[in-house]
Length: 118
Image 1: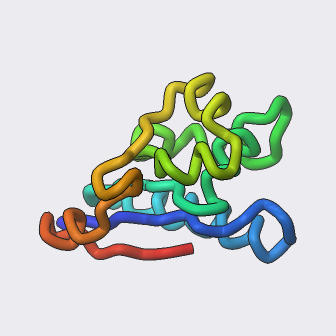
Image 2: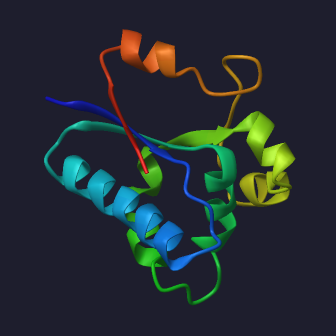
């Protein structure tokens, strides 16, 4: 079984960013459906996707919902910096602050995860 950590760093500003975020979710779905261990982390500007993937009638809401159980959380520092802490709380997503307010990627590597960034 693979252990995959998918980190969404893409902003919400451009079509390219949107494509990267959707590709991250599709990758998570593929690994999940194969029975692999998957963690999704939203970091940096990627923290803004929590609100976007929960907008009413959003095009990719169902894709996000299909992997929501694999969302490990959102960078606590970045959620505050990008002013999305309310969205994170509203949608009951964990804040991760393992290393100076940020997720610990070393911890993931130490646990045997392959880290993929989008």
